[in-house]
Length: 241
Image 1 (tube, rainbow, N blue to C red):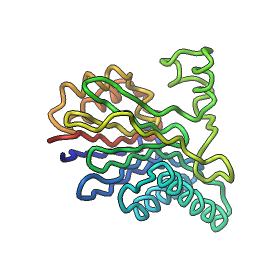
Image 2 (cartoon, rainbow, N blue to C red):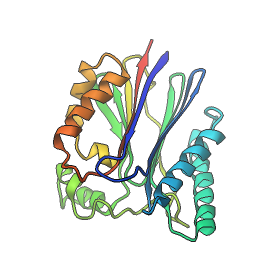
Image 3 (spheres, one colour):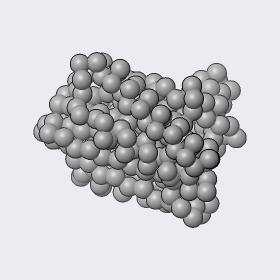
């Protein structure tokens, strides 16, 4: 199998971009990351860059214990960001959504509200859950899924890299093998909050390649933003024969 990959990141309606995407291709797969920096005054972008560069540098391929491996990547990135906080004398944090693929195997994880979506056999098979107050409200039935994007607590994050003890990711190992025709989407909240799950799938059906899929979704985003929108980033991956 081969991977068709496309990445996109924009400052959106902000004056600078604190998002960061990262891709490290390897023979039978690779590691793919979307990180959304928090902190302002350009410190957020330092945190997201640190997360991406640390995890891509340290990744050498999937191990026999992928869950522990991914958790260790997050721990190493967290340590580096905490060091940066001391050096700069400033609070800086970052979300992270990470996907590692090797052949027909995959593992993904997230900390914060950047997401990974897995499309398998022409349907949305799985996606990560946000670590936010708003998502807890959704799980408790207080708000609907469509209300997540603009809930007043959507930006109140419960886990992020750059935290002393609240950075550990949720790790997902699928119960199926990765097949040709499957696809993954990694994105920051500045992207997913403007696209519904079913629209992601519709655009995937229409797409000729990973870049086309991203462009179709970005058209939807551009039609819905108001000029004051957050940074937005995404990585699209299509599995080919």
